[in-house]
Length: 532
Image 1 (cartoon, rainbow, N blue to C red):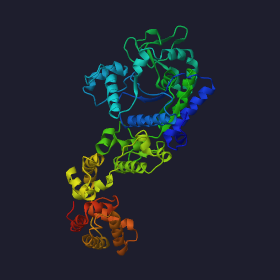
Image 2 (image 1 turned 90 degrees about the vertical axis):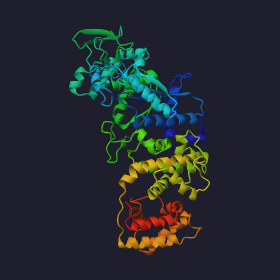
Image 3 (image 1 turned 120 degrees about the vertical axis):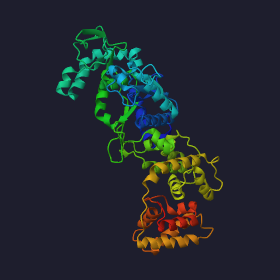
Image 4 (image 1 turned 45 degrees about the vertical axis):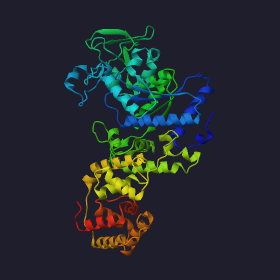
């Protein structure tokens, strides 16, 4: 029934997969017969804005857990990944990025699927954003089923649970009211009726709750008392009760969410139980931070978009960033991209030397669902960036000229992974390295050491000219001979004086690719103050 190697893997997706398996075992012991019901993995989406890096993170991480569960159970238990769009939410503000925003003001608080599409491509704003979400997810090849909250409410899929909520109205209120202030308590209701006169989502108190006939009574916006059914899309649930109701109605077995939901998660679970459901396994992940350590916000625009990342790095590296330590707060800004790219290829390089147990802990297992590509570029992304910087290369052809010296058999055709890295490196250099270059003059000690290094580079034997280790040892020797107390300061000086940056990859590896003679020329040019 289970794969024993995956049962002992320490990778967090396998840990979550085992938690789901334990949940199924508990259900079985309680006499709950699931029949052929698949294990349901869920993610949620708010369609008031475009899909963003958090959307990608939630779906890619959930997919990793789903894949781990399938491997753990050897595919003997069916699974589904559903992506639910909360598109019946009332529009609270008009996005500033839409055409003719003033024309949408009249539709405030109407369900997003009842708001006209300002882009003119779909029958509503909600459906336009849903289409953007689906195109976004499809572009990454995710295997998922899309569900619209509007369709779930209006088709009757939620009717049974809305009627249960009527019967359990007091129990739900006992859960919710202690979490609210006195003013909010006075008007709170888990049911949000859709006004029959204006079509808006109403936040109004209930005058009567009638489980016998499945209706609620409230005052409409014009003061008219209205009694109407809770079924058929006449109402929606407040977002916190909606979370728990969705779990119960859709039979969700696993859902992950950000730390901002953590305090509310017990409420979701209690409401799920009140409505006769079994709360899913829940995984809380930390939120991304910007370079200042502040929470990333779409409103502030202080983060990186998926499009931003993919302009400078392969999608696998973005998956790795999401895989690594999801429960630890991580800074997400452009400086992390080169390091993450190289870490991805390091994990990929290690795969061929690992046994099955080790591979289950390797991030590339989870990025590629156990079948990573056979790809190992001979140069790191950091080295490529330094080559672009030293050669001032604005095109990949120049870069390939140096690569051929180091790896003569490599071509863009037979090394497509390396070729795409060259394009990423040029783009990243132009936008982030070049504008921030800051050359400095050397100290007397540094100048003497650099002049010595030039002499040694010009006398390097042919055998050593592309030997990165030998060249690294030579550079170390120069630093020692010129009595640098800390050799890190020596290497930092090389980078700051010659490349206008404070750090980089192993300089010996760079010299092996760029060439000792070319590096000597670069150093002499920098000592003459002719770099800018």
